[in-house]
Image (cartoon, rainbow, N blue to C red; front, side, top):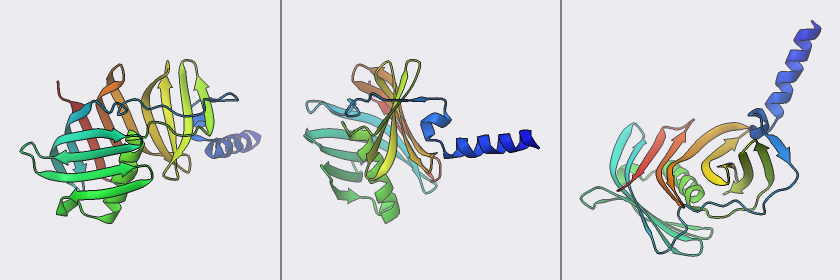
Length: 203
């Protein structure tokens, strides 16, 4: 009985623990002031990817383009390979504008989700609220559009962002095949919504 009670208390405490602690990370007292995401920070570069987006049981393939236009100012467009626009968004500070979107995707819930996803994808810096570490890995906690995000770094290189709600993973942003400050492959995977985005840079 005592063992059962101890086990129950352990799982209750684990359930209340933060996402990093649940995954074996330890809280650190010293923290950087801001997160750093360098992957869409160069205003002189056009970030062009071959993309596949699965949403609402439909698949869309084409070209995904991110252009930094100024400080905290980005434009994101997704077109077919022959140039027809699927969606076109502008982010400037806290402002968000839908320039154009395909009628099939013009749903408020999807637009709001894409807004959150792409804001997290292009946000270069955000104030750090907590810092966790495990060996060469660090996790920095921040809020983006009032949602809790954890930035994962290995040897100071960003390789993943996780959006968390009630200490459960909701969205994973994975950065792989990294060349300096350019992530050649990016995947955005939702756990509770039928949306998956795969980006692969053109060679």
